[in-house]
Image (cartoon, rainbow, N blue to C red; front, side):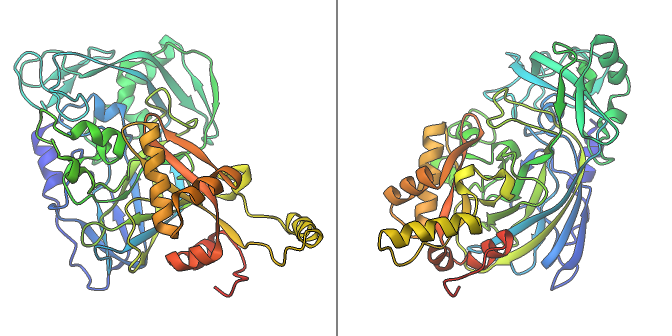
Length: 456
């Protein structure tokens, strides 16, 4: 990646004052250098109720082998939303999502000692000339193809412990892991197969041609690993969550934060597979305009992303944004598709309510509780801390005791792992009156088609 190309992205024209009430649609094909920085100008603003259409670049492995990118991803340049003030929230409806890559490569990572200072995701150095975040060139294919542009030495901070190359069918419904010959054929046209957007500067990971798994067939179900709002303190995009973010506290590099500064994160890096087309994500506003950004599209993933990485792809995404005035939240709230909800958290059917009503009459219970699903995101250095964080966020949001939230999550929901080691969903059916008090009843009822029978 050349310095000139990276600088041209940083100095792209600021359109934040294009229209006082905001544009109907903001098209995004510009990317960060891996850093979410609230002091940098945003695109837009998009109007309240308007749309963001983006061509996203692959996350994880491509940026991970591109030392000049100062974070683990290459997310879109943030877009301001008109009328979004600090202390509000932004509801983001994922209208459409399409995979454009023809193939991907991924697997477990192995950091290479001597090629980073404390954190290989955001503090890469050339092992020979010592340049921080060196520009690189690609020479050939394979795991030694990424070379420092200054001194020519192998400079990638990551290698595969076990990796694979996967091709997709034309309809992007299934994928197949490839043998060495086919993987190397793809590697020779890596940028084409990755469908990298024109503004992307990452080295395509397909260049490495990993082939440890062969002939494995998978189903595609794309989602966004990164979707959220800009944190109130500058940080690498991949570290905008409580697990990766904890590595920044007292770190020996330029992105070091204190514990208090880490609380200014917005948890946009979730890797939750339910953040897909049809879902609705509610995000905190911690800087003026909110700064909606996205990226790290995955073609598929099992809960937990236990390998550390999954099938990163380029794609197109359409979002619709809505400002929720005065909804002060600390982290994201997710309204998944019904089919993505845990069995116990799904809205009750008419038949189930009829059976419950008969049971209630037999025991002298006058009325049934009216409820709807909600999923509160929690993050932390480990899964226990993330669960505690999510439970407390849910209790604060819904004006419940922590004990009550635990009971409801146990009998009407579940604790789901988004990403190991520290992103979870606290999902359960919440009483409509509590949702109304929180200012969420209309949105939740609209999303799930639930009649507000309690007068909300």
